[in-house]
Structures are given as structure tokens and as C-alpha cells.
Length: 483
Image (cartoon, rainbow, N blue to C red; front, side, top):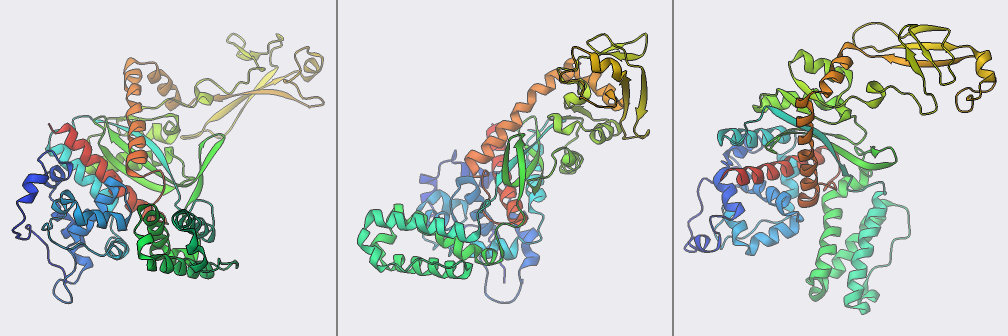
């Protein structure tokens, strides 16, 4: 059964909050900024309204998860801090003397109550609405980019992950009391995941029985991490490692295993839309949805700022059709041609043919590729092979015994030609300077809110993590601008 908590429970100690939680405290400011009753409205169908035990207030449970996103703590540590940190208790709408929840309740809340809920769009939409009401969002431009998040289990097997975390726990224990080694269970020597989980459970149980050791901070942290991995993810571990994660590429020679979050952000640095995908997805393919999500959130999108990944022809066509200016440079292969350094061909406008650096002109040309919207054609120029065989510059240009020598040039579409002209405008150059803002936002998500590594397995877990992290950074940005 669910009952919404509308007011702070009366307590003779409530006056403490006015003393120890000042007006400038961030959590107090968030409580005053956001009406969290929308959480109750969204989740009420997930609970029985008139039967069974009274459930923990869903708003409080959601706030616990928000605290995790803000302060990057484990379930156990966030609950423990809420036991003695009065700013946490104030934020959670608790009386100073109230007991805290069991950390396992957060796992159940994530899995049972937040399932099938479009939390990502809902929370972003809520913060955008607040920013508009506060007259903070004035720009009609959005900046787009993608940030990558490594999978929690990376490319290691579940058994390797458990072994690694158990090893770190044993090392911390030995540093405190090496004599306990004789009491620990024998290490698992089989290849069965079930045996590794059983070993870890025994290890945890024995260390916890050594009450003095288990409470030492240097041991408590790796102990909690191993416990959370076994308890929270035991079902996922039995299935496989992170099955949703994929290999993506940050550059031509570096890769990662995990997920991508495709972001749209206003020039005021408020995130207006996000899409969480597996790591291999193309950035440019998400642009149109990011625009539409931003518009649905209340943004009048007139300009989009992004890197080369977003300048593919479909996006140029979409932007033109919807009267949106796309500030994204064309791929150099399109704007400059794909000519290699050793192939220095020059176009003779009178003859309408290319001339190689030896001075030999092409003997004919042929157009290849299908004509039509969204298709690029290529003009291929053919040179006299007999001249190529005797050419002093044939090294790296003509392949020995080849029956033909050609040079191909892509025919730019109207969209590409227009974009090339737009790239030279002052407006394009000025707006391009705004792109750094989203790179800074990506860095904030990763380094201040733990977004560099997934906190759970699976795409749904990544979406939940993204929703809470983005909600947190948007609220912090609104507080900073609302002065």
C-alpha cells in the first residue's frame, strides 16, 4: 500500500535543520526548486493503493537514487550517510531521529518500480520546464554530441570480475590481520560461476563475523563492493556478462566496451534531450530524434551545433526541410575531395578533364552511381595506360600491369554545395565556437557523477543511470543560473 508523504513528520528536533542546513545548501535549494510530487503521480500505478503493508514513500526512494547520482556513493554508503548527515535527512523529508531504510530496498525499487518507465525523457523534460519557467532557457540553438560509458563488467567474464573483487578484499584484510588467512574459505578452483558466487558468499560471511575487522573503512569499501556485486547482480551474473554492451570507437585507433549517450544541450548548458544506445551506434543517426525530443521538451530549435559526424546527407536534408541551420562541418572527403598526396590532379575547366602532375590529360570520363535524391554520383576519369607505364611519377600512382588508371571525383549534391557555402559564413564560424560547452558537460558527467563507468548491467540500467545523472547536472546548472 502506498501513502504519499506531503509534509515533514512532526519532531521536537526539527529546529535542528534550520541550524545545520543553511539556505545556500544545495540539497535545501533542490527541495525548494523541484516539486517532487510528479514522482508519486508517475509511480502510483506500480503500487497497491489500498491493500498490504505501507510502502516506503516512492519520492523518498527516488531521492535516495538522486543522492547516489549527485554524490557517487554505493547503496550501502548512501544509506549509511543518511543516518547521520542532517542535510540528507532534510532532503529525504525525514525527522532527525527517523531510522533509515535497508539498502536492499533500493535494488527492489530500481527493478520493480522504475521498470517500463520512460524516466530519461520525463526527468529531462521536468528540468527543461523548470528552466523555462525560471526564464533561464532563451536560446533556440542546441549543441549535440555523444559521450561513452564503459560497461560495468567490461570485457571480463563474470567470474573474473568476482575473482578480482574478492582478491582486493582479501588483500585489504591481510594488510590489517594476516592471521585471519587461516579462517578464510579455500579459493574456488573450478570454472563454474555458481562455485565462484558460493565462495564469495562464504568469504563475505566470515569477514563480517570478524566484527572488528569488517568495520574498518579500508575493508568496508571493498567488502560492500563485493556484496553489492553478488547480491544486486547475482541474477545477471548467472546469465552472462553485460550482454547489451558493445564495442565502440572513440577514434581510429582507440575503442571501448559499453554504451553511448547521445546528448542535446542548450547554449545555457541545460541538457534538453538524451538517447542511450549500445556503444557501436553511429552518432549522426541520432540527430533527428534529439531534435524532436528537444522540441517535445519545449525548445524552439532553430540551430543545431555539432561535429562532422552530424553532417551526413540525411541530416542536411532534414534540417533544410525543417528550417533548421546545421552548424556541422562536412567530412573532408566531401568538402575537399579524397585525393591522396601523391595523386596531385588538377582540373582543366576548358577541357572538362583532369590532368595528372606529369601533364597527361585524361582521355575520357564516365559517370557512375544512381541518380536521385540522397544518392551521390561519381565522375571517373580514365588515363592512357601506355603513358602511365613510362611515366617517371608512376611510383605510388600506377600499379604495375594494371589494365587501367582512373581518378574518381564525387559529385557534390545540392545539399553538400549549400553546406560548403554555409561553412564560410560568419554565423557558422561564430556558432561553431559554442561546441566546447558540450564537451565540458560530458566531462562533468563522467568525473563528478560517475558516468565514465556503468553502475549496473544492461541497457535499461544504463538509461536509469543516465536519467538520474542528467537530472542532477541540470538541477545544479539551474541553481547556478537562477540568481
